[in-house]
Image 1: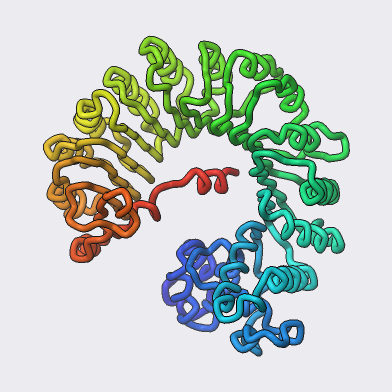
Image 2 (image 1 turned 180 degrees about the vertical axis):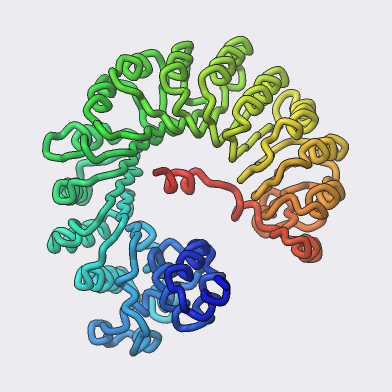
Length: 522
């Protein structure tokens, strides 16, 4: 009965709840448009709420936005591809806007025409399109849920033009519910363009007064101090997410002052910062409030010492994402002590990424995985071609399968010299686990495709699969430079897996990149 009402249009509220489940499944949403007028009307807003972030390679939506501005584009052949009429006022549906993705989409749209006339479709034309699009957004008084501003040194000229438009129309800022700031600048030099960006940004933050998220990177210490310590802004009562990326903590002595005044901070993410030593950790330990460290990503450059265990003791219960790579020659006893602390204090890890080559440490890793399996959703284990790599891969495959949780969103095994017999043991032991995304990357290995078909394909235990394997027969276009081979390139095999509803994808399209993770931090 409910199904009949959904398709007949008698229950639009119920219909919308169904369609909302396909929010990020764009091919399904496009199919929903064709069902009937009601489904079309309910689906279009979902398709158009964040168009600049959809990586389909089709940027014709920009022309649709510009449909009533043909007079502003006279003299450009591009006008011929802009529709005269549209069914909806699509700009009203936009809810999320990332400035970098906005620039990138415009660049790619203009590139379609640039080859025919490079002198006409140049930087001046790109700036014109930026201006026209923002003019549309401003005049339609769009209510953005989130505006993300990403600052790179190479985009400052474009940024300043957009900032000036925004500052000339303050209602646009006031209508934004969440403002998120990402600063990826290794050296914020005091040149005119950078100073203008800084001044414009300060005014935008001051006008908005609801800054929710900041990402700060590299050595722009004066910039982060001016944002987080200035009395001109209300960050202390609005900022709930702080991401520190590759920050050099040397010479920073006011971390505790910053964190003490951030009253609603719900998550801190420390990503490849250095050094994480007693000087930094002591400032955190001295805080009178909880330090809600949700993500801690470290590699051998992070320069941790014995005080690291104190950080885990204070914040380990909040930790959800942990990524760790020890220095290759670090003492075994030190590694063991660190893992004992992780096992003791970190019970809520959902995402674990480990890069290790010491056989003895893996038994503690297995203990950690078993300890957090009720929470674990993402797991990545990497072994490189250093010492004892043969034995490491065997130890992992012989012990990992039986301790995996019943469901994993993501499993990434980046191993070396996998033996088919070891891999079969892993697959047999993990038969009770369904893995949404399974990625396997290894070199100098035996053929693991037969056990994959037997224990993964035929039992439909994954949804998405990517394999990079030296035993496969065809070089992938993505990895030919490194002489790696992908299952994705074997068309007959891909078709066979699809018969079992398993989508074989390229490794690069399935692997979680750091940039993807950072953007999804809330």
